[in-house]
Length: 518
Image (cartoon, rainbow, N blue to C red; front, top):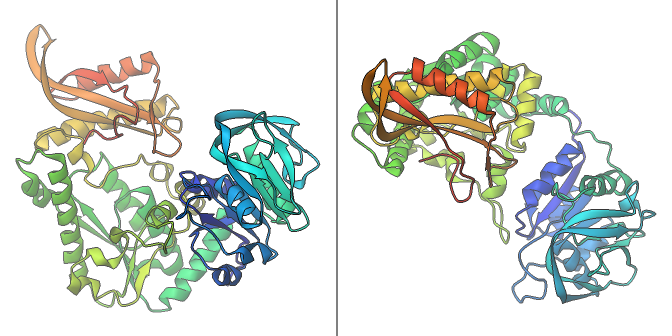
């Protein structure tokens, strides 16, 4: 087996930033795993991490039901970094004092650092950090000293270099903290002695070996291929490992973007040859949603029919004992519980399939990407040689264009939104903005307005353009596309796409709106 990367454990106390901590650690080329704070010291010892990070959390350590850890955690001899709640928990557990602050600190706060501390190596004497706390440490445990302070907080950071335990009250993982990444890198490299061996090239080698070992020399795998980034990269990775012993089922429900079915066929018959089944279910799906306008009903009908199509194809196959899925790490983290063990979402296991189909996959589920974040998945795709347009494909909802047609769905309406979406994507790419704008698409509204074309009165649809920027899709801002680009897109859509006589641009953030209209 290939060399296993060094690992850091992040104990999750329910912080909204836990995923962000993990991403920042990965960006420093160090592997990390998020685990519930309820993990036992014995389990931690078994995992043998090179470092432990205690996340923030919404509770106060003084609350009766606040999550705590066994004090023996601090005696393992493993370097520890406590962040926000993690700092207060460390102080409380080891005999320090935590009190409600006279003045709460939220947002950007100037912090003065002791740059002789290993955690603060290479930093400026004063740096702005992101604070978010009501309680703070007023007395450090024995053996700890303050290594950073602000106007209102004497212990913005504390350290016990002898035991290699460091804590910070601020959030180094957020971009608002000027030198936050340096804090994390100092902990990883100066304190934990990490070598930075987490690369996507190394991951691919390890993943291929793991897939081969899991599946065996004769095992066969089935994967539902949507054409999206996650399932495409999973398919390419498994194909690299076992070749055409992978069967991919691509269900064309008729709600795909322009050219996607053709792209999937080309890549997975030529570049990554698998046993590819393209199920043409366009009429089947269109009949099911005929006359349906409610968006949630659309989603449920399409979701159920997709499972039914996949199940129909699975019943035709013999000797396929493994089910593969493109589950990625945010799915795993978000499905867990702070006070319990992680539980994978139902749609990421065999349980969503009919019993007679689920029972066929006696080998279980293969999820080669389950420890990767989206940006890492894209890097794996690039390393494997998948086409750029597939690796950087726009996020796309499962129901596809069906929920980008407001109201009832017809073939004519689908054609309108498909062609307009293709023009939008083409023009944004030509402007060199396809990597700067995180998601962009068109929506065919259910509103008709009066227009004039060729001296004739028209009464056609209003089409909306949605383009957003975001780091995490939890909050988004509308993209400030250049007016000249918007004018060009509008002119092309009105001239080239039938039944559209007016274009509007959605300038709503999330919240209050969502990214998709339905």
